[in-house]
Length: 218
Image 1 (cartoon, rainbow, N blue to C red):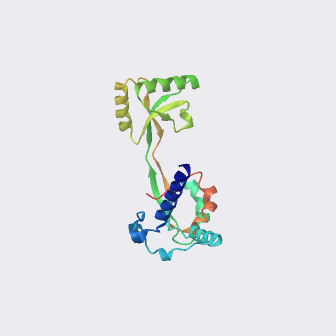
Image 2: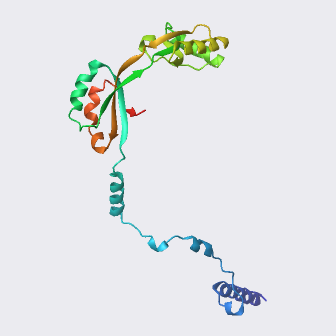
Image 3: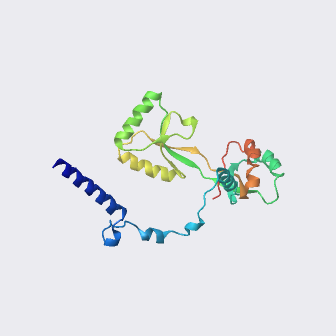
């Protein structure tokens, strides 16, 4: 009996192996074929694919990184008349038409100001009170006003006073409006079409910009 059982198991295993291998396909006994022909149809020119060597990949990356950037317009300033002498002298070595000096104006700046406070403890205490009132604040933009807080910056005294009135209704009591900076007039340095060649020369001008950053043209 045991021998018969072993023979039956052996025959079943052989039969399953033959079925899964497709031996009986001509008799209509074969496992279903699992395939996704739609994936092959979706391939786009697979014959165009090719493997790249490591040195070719590095060469392509280098050539892509070295592609010239499009020209851009940058400006810096305002510059007072006293700052323009050395700057003009340096710019005389630049190609004609590559730079311009144009009149510019920076409007006055008015702040809603709280301070000065006697120390960091008093300043932090005031910050906590403002947070409880739901009033946002910023550091003051001028060292002359420290330690203090700014509750807003405005280009006119009237606009600052209007906002102060609104803050007073929220419980702000000791703030007042101050002029942080008067209107300033001067010259703006503009580079209208700065390409890679001229970008390489910008560092030559950095010591003459009095700390004024380059920014996109307005």
